[in-house]
Image (cartoon, one colour):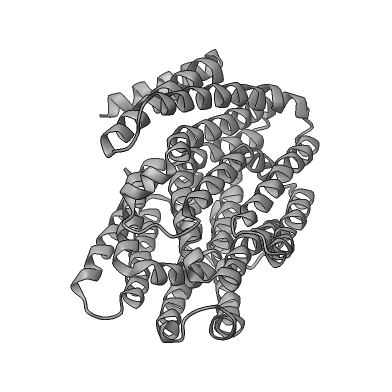
Amino acid sequence: MILGTSLYTSRIILSIIGIENFGIYNIVGGFVAVFSIISATMVASTQRYLTYELGKKDNHSQEFFGVAMNIHIGIGIILLLLFETIGLWFLNSRLNIAQDRIVAANWLYQCSIFTFLINVVSAPYLAIIISHEKMKAFAYINVIEVSLKLLIVYLLLLFSMDRLILYGIFLLFVSIFVRFIYALYCNAHFKESEYIWVKDTRYYKEMIRFAGLNFFGACSAILSSQGVNILLNLFFGVTVNAARGIALQVEAAITKFVNDFTTALNPQITKSYAAGDIEYMMELTYRGSKFSFFLFFFFSLPILIQTPLILSIWLKEVPEYTVIFIRYSLVIAMLNTLSYSLTTCAFATGNIKSLSIWLGCIRFSVLPLCYIVLNLGFSAYVVYVVSLIIDFILLFVRLKIVSHIIDVSMSVFFSNVILKVMPVVVLSVIVSCGLYLLISVDSFFTLIFFTMTTCFATGVLIYFWGFDKNEQLYVNKMIISKLNRN
C-alpha cells in the first residue's frame, strides 16, 4: 500500500507542478532533504545504544535517550547556521535556476530546512520505537504520513498561489504532525522517552564518538548524492534534475519497503550481540542480507524490464534520461541491500572506526570522478556508472572490514548469501526476458499480466532456490502469522 501510494503521489505531483518545478524541488528541496541521511545516521546511533541497553538486565536507556536528544538539538542548531549562510549563498548564486523561479526556490528552501530540523530533533523517538520492535506502530504511522502526503498534493488544486511554494509549506505541516504523533506514542508507552538532563560526560563521549564516526560516513553519502545532483544541474539544467528526482522516488519507494523489513530485524541483531550469542547474530545477518536483496529484486525486476511502458502509463510527460536513470538507480540500490545487515552487525559491536573511515573516503571519490567524466563531455547517465562501480567496491570493502570486526570468514558470507542469490537472479531474468519476448506488452492489462507472471516465477525461484529449509519455515511462519491477523 505504502509503495503504491508513494509512486502514485510522485505521478500526481509531477503532473500538477510541472517538470521545471519538479526539477527545482528535486535540486532545492533535495539539497536539504538529502541531509536526512544525517537524521537517519543519528537514529541508527541512538537505536544502537538503546537496543544494546535493552538487551542487558541493568540498562541506562533513559540516560542515553536524554543524551541523544541534547546531541540532536545541538546538531540542529549547527546545521541551521550552515543552511542559512553557505546554503543560502549557494542557492542564489550558483544553482542553475531561472530568475523568475528564484523567489519560489527560496520559499521551498526555507520550508525544507525547518522540515529537516523537525525530523532531526524527533529522531530519538523513532529510535525508541525501533529498539522496542514496535513495528506495527511504526507501520501505522508510516501509512498516515504517506496518506497525508498524497492528500496535500490534491489540496494544491484548491489554491491559486504558487504551487511549488505551497507544496513546501504543506510538507512542513505534515512533518510537524507526524513527528508529534511519534512523540505522543513514545511518551505513552516507553518510560525512557521521558526526558531527563544528563550531566555525566561519559554518556556524551561514548555516543558522540560513535555518532561522529557514523556522521563521517553520512557526510560522504550526502556529497555523493547531492553533489551529483548539483553537477547534473550545472551541466544539464533542471530538466535532468527532474529525471533524477523521478528515479530517486521510484528507488526510495522500493527501498522504504525493504527498510521496513530490515528495521524489524536490526534490533534482534544488536540484542543478540549484547547477550553474547554471536552465532545467532551471524545467522540473522546472513538472513537479513539475503532477504533484503530478494525483496528488492522481487519488486524491481518487472520495473527494470518494462520501464518505458510503466513510465508512459504512470506519467503524462516523461523527462529525458528518466528510463536509464531509473534502471541504474534500482541496480545500485539492489547491490547495496546486500550490505544492510553487515552494517548493522558492525554497529552492534560499536567498533565502527575503520568501517566508517574507509567507506567514507571511498564514497568521497564519487564527486570528483563524476565531475571529470561530465567535463569530458560524457552523457548524464555516466554519473550512475561511476556510482555503480564505487558501490560495487564498497560492498567488498565493507565485507572485508566486518569479517575482521566479528572474526568471520568472507567465504561464509559468499556461500550463504552471494551464491544463493546469483542463481535466482540469473534464472529470474531469463524467465522474465523470455516472457517479454513471447508476449506483446503494450497496454496496461498486458503489463499487469506480465508483472504478475514475473513476480510469481521470481517468488517460486526465491523460495525453492534461494532459501534453505530453516528460511522456508521462517517464511511460512511469517505468512501464517499475517493471515491469522487478517
